[in-house]
Image (tube, rainbow, N blue to C red; front, top):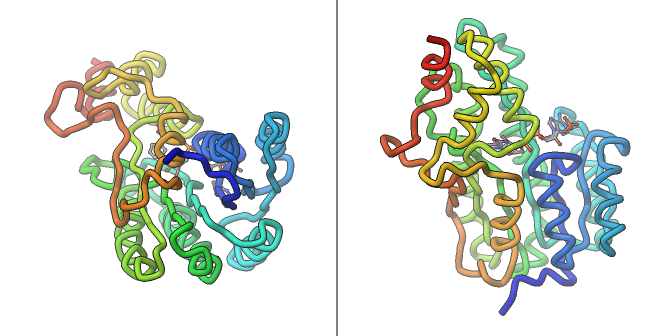
Length: 277
Ligand code: NDP
């Protein structure tokens, strides 16, 4: 029993950068052929090149996830190029942190569209391919510990990720009878553009120094650890592999220890306020 994904066929969304890129490269290193999703060839070319240079096989899978027709075409092409599908990683996401009166309805809708509706549309489109793969298949959603956020400004993002976890549970029951496993990974802060942008916004709103806030908040966990994307791709490889064969309908948290009330568990907003004083 090992984590080899040799012969498996994977689609990873938002794989041009950040966590998605790391997951795509990690799956390919384990032997999977990967459809690398992004908005344009330009945005996924670095991932494709990295996989190919390492001896792996990858295809581009292009679509703006706000476009339902583009999603359908991308899924059909990806499954065609791969000759089926065993691993689906719904990773792409966006994050805007604004209090309710400041949040334009368009921002709310965009967050739900990319973070929740697009994963539904993609999963629906590849449903027959997943059933065909049966016990070989694994669906992974990249959720967030912020699904359980109780902080001002996190409403839309938390709602989208909470919705994703709810969808995951129900989908796991639908697909369980076919042997397909379905899980969420809930990361804490991970060093990517999304995390940097979010901290810039929080620092600006509180009048706190960005660098100090970023360094403090990113390590706000029991281990005092700075999580990099490989912390999430390790979990994705595990869940996609034989080793995760009895794990389904679960949210697996990867955050360095982030239990509310524990050491280092202050919210980023509380840290920003403290640094602003
Ligand atoms: P990044 O912003 O680095 O990457 C997000 C990815 O999603 C990009 O590839 C982006 O493509 C893609 N994407 C966004 N909107 C669209 C769209 N309309 N159509 C197609 N692709 C789109 O973020 P992360 O890597 O940090 O985030 C990956 C996932 O992890 C997200 O779901 C996020 O919510 C989750 N997460 C991240 C955490 C963190 O601290 N970083 C913590 C918890 C969860 P493009 O480059 O073209 O914009």
